[in-house]
Image (cartoon, rainbow, N blue to C red):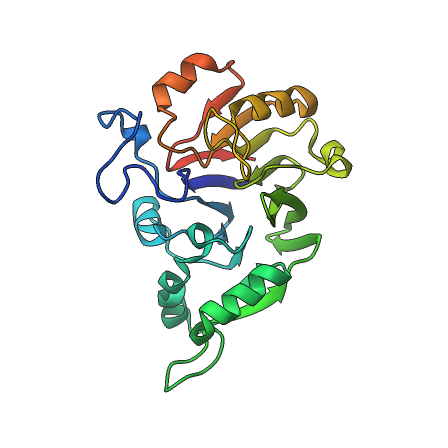
Length: 257
């Protein structure tokens, strides 16, 4: 069985609509304009590997009928990627086994400081996570098949974030303002490239549409999928501007890699 990649959420930090119901330039009658905060899922046979714990994680899991989690890989420490962490407690209660987390140094430090109760026993509540150092390459085996997850440091404004490459076929980078030149060759010719495209105008911490289009010309993936889109980007309107090999994401979008 091939590996399935699911984009659980493809919205920017406040989601669409905002908590006050504001849709910006997005047409509320188009279902694909309803965007929860970014996270993604790698399904490998009966194992599920999560990328980031979005604040909308509970609704994302319910909508996609996700019943178990093996591990979580974090991109960076911002709230829209981490603040759904407590929702995973149910899987510890269900399986009586700590969930493995993988994060770089800064994100690990933030998680331990902000959610200390998740990592140490406290007043009868057991620790539910085991925090691991993020390596350049992680290999998981299941039913004689391999899942290879590689990590690459990228720039995200004033901090670093992580781009993940899965089985040398798909790269996922939800928050990025620069991919370092030394890594460009490592993502050329991929089957899928899921990339941050916050808005049309430039932004100091994110790619905009022009920057994505320029990057795609260099790395030439078979298909590019735009994620982390804010409410300036209407699903149907941006589709009119894009070539056939580039598409906007929508919540629940999935593909085989």
